[in-house]
Image (cartoon, rainbow, N blue to C red; front, side, top):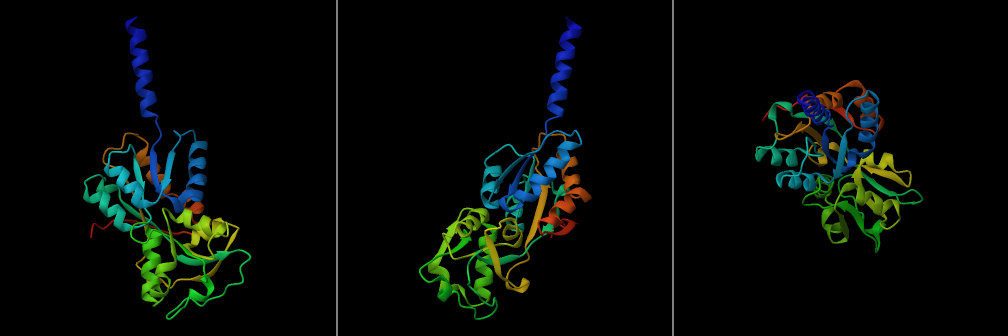
Length: 255
């Protein structure tokens, strides 16, 4: 009986150790992470659970104690927020990806615009709305507002913005034809055949779009560090590039 009890305890410990990591990831990473986690699982590794939302939403959930092992943010600010609360293992943090923001329209739209200083979107919008992530919290919305301000276009559209709770929600508004224009990541536009890119915002018009990832301090899965290594490896790199991301893969400097 003692031997049987020991086997049961050992089996339970192994099951706990084999638990795959839970990744809280920015919504714009959806397609890439679906491919990456499927490839990871094919190697007989513990399955990864991915929770997708806007980075600000995920950061707040982590702060409130949500069970997550890794945080994959769409901007530095929200990773800094979580790190500032002492919830990140700082030695694990990596600036992994870069992206761009683009102006999109429904695929059948005839709208044209030159994205640059003095651009005017009011005529194209008409009575419609400009779909964006929340401009005060969602990273893509923050980048978009910064770019519009830099290019002198914010004043003309600020009262016509349809603010969504994530970049994928903003994408959906344009994809469904509910908004004539939207600002999303280039990778989001590439993932939806019902939209087209009509302009790309210059890099200098907004802060650099960097995606950091880190293991969280209270990570429970023993596979957390291994999965972070996998995200930095060639299989994941190919999946990220396929979706249009640029690979940075640079350890965080702490500055």
